[in-house]
Amino acid sequence: MMTRQSPSWDLNRFVKTLSYFGVVPILSQINWFQQWFGSRPDPTVNSRSLTLSPTPTSLPTAPALSMMPQTILAIGTRDVLTAVVDHLQQQGKPIRAGSIDSANPHLPIGENVEWVTLDLQQPPAPELLTDIRGIICAPNSEVVEPTVRFLLQAVQRSTVRLPIFDFSQQSASGSEANRSEAELSEIWGALDDVVMGGVSQSGIRLNGDTAEFSGQVSTANSGGFASVRTRNLEPPIDLSSYDGIELQLKGDGNRYKFMLRGETQWDGVAHCASFDTIPQTWITVRIPFATLIPVFRARTLPNAPLKLNCIRALQLMLSKFEYDGALNPHFQPGFFQLQVQSISAYQQGNRSPFVLVCPPSPETEILLRQSGLPVMILRPAEGDDAAKIAADGVRAIDRLEHN
Image (tube, rainbow, N blue to C red; front, side, top):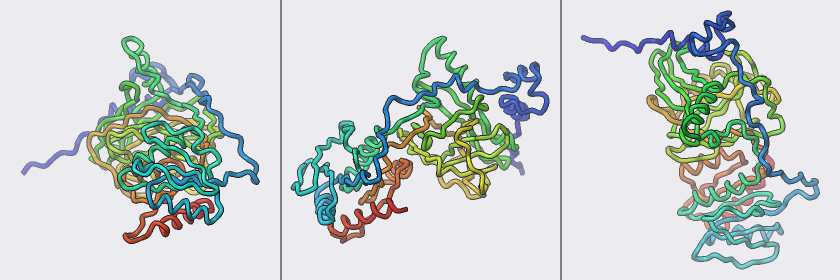
C-alpha cells in the first residue's frame, strides 16, 4: 500500500525570506551573504521615496455643537419612502428626500422637506450629503445594490485621502515597466508559512494598473497562510491625522487580512483587520484604525495600542486562521488572487449613520460593513406595513448615534 508523502519544506526559500527582510542573525549584516540571496545588508525602505501627499479635497470645518447637522437623508422607492418622510415630518425634523422609483419620481413635498433629483447612473452631486445627520435607505429589492453603491460613492467623495501606495500610477511598458517591477520588489516581499515549516507560495507583481498578490496557499505541513509585507519603512510614516486605511481592490471571495506594524521587530506585534472580498468585483474596503486588533502570531493581545505616528510596515495576508485558533470562514486552499489598486489613509468626511430597511444580498452587505460608517440593516417581517418600517428606520438612526 502506497502512502502519500507530505510536500517537502524548502530550506532555500526559508533563508531567502529571512534574507529579504534582513533578519538572519549576524549574516544579514554581511554584504556577500545578502547578495547571495538577492538582497542587501539591513534592508529597509526609504519612506521619503513614497508619494505621501493628501488629495486636494479639503474637509469641511467641524461645525460648532449648536450648528451640528440635523437633516435626515431619506432615499428610496414608493410607500416606504413616503412613510419615512411622513414620520420625520411628524417629529419636526428637516428632511432631504429623493426617489429612485422611475415610475413615481416625485413625492408630495411638505414642510421641512428638500426634494432632490437622483440618477443612479450618474455620480452623486457633491452637496447630497451636506449637513446630513443620518441616512435612511429604503429601496425596493430590485435596486438595493445600485442604491447602496450610489450612496457610498457620495460618502467617498467627501473623503480626504493620503495615498501610500497607488499602483494605478505604476502601469508602464518596456523599460519603464521593468523599473516599476524592480521598485515594487524592493518594497514588498513574500512572507509565507515556509517560516514555520509550511509549503504555501505567494508573490506580488504589477498587473496593469494593480499590484497582484497571488499564489498557492496550502494547509500541508501544518501551514495555511501566504502573505506579502513591506520591508521596514525608514523613517516611519505618520498616520495620526487620519481615521483609517482604505483599500481599492478586487478579490476572489476569500477573507483576507490587512496589518499595520509599529515595531521594527521581525516577529513582533501586528495590528490586524479581516475583510471579505466579492469574486471578480471591485470594492472599497475601509478599516477604521479604532477597529484594528493587536495580535502576535494570530493570538489577540490586551493593552497593545498602535502608535499611529510610527508606522513601520504594511502587510496583506490570506490565512486559514482568524484569531485565537478560530478558523477563517471564507478560506479556500489552492490558487488565490487579490488585485490591489491602491492603499491609502483616509479622513472620513461624513460619518452619518446609515440605515438600510431592506434585506441586502451578501455582496451588498459586505460593501456596507466595510464602508467605515455606523451601519444598521433592518429586515422587515412579512406583513410589516410601511409606517412600522419607517418608524423602525428612524429609531435605528437614533440608536446608531448613541452607540
